[in-house]
Length: 134
Image 1: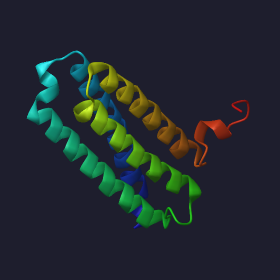
Image 2 (image 1 turned 90 degrees about the vertical axis):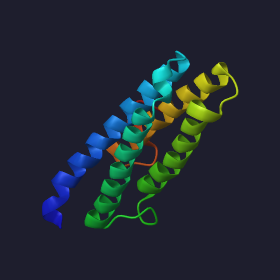
Image 3 (image 1 turned 45 degrees about the vertical axis):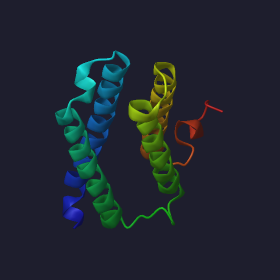
Image 4 (image 1 turned 30 degrees about the vertical axis):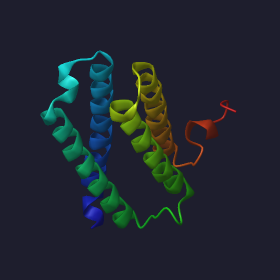
């Protein structure tokens, strides 16, 4: 299975970036009160991409034999994933006002970017672990 590592990692990274881009697109459309934000096709594309993302992540964990129990950076990243999903739900659907949805939207983007920094540094503090940040 290690022979598939680079392919699976490329798929994972691509779907991570596409997921973020689709979330930003949907959020901006929602904040602009565009009918496109409610298009079923856009939601389906997002769900399909996120399903592939999850599958690729699980396969990567299996190939590299990493788990959130033994890798603290992975545990933090997966915990933040749950936070990001919750913030995204409130940003795109459950926020009571446009202001609330915008606040949840910005918080979700910040969480997404911090998860990226954790993945890139493989450290639970992400970018905050780099010299000069603290």
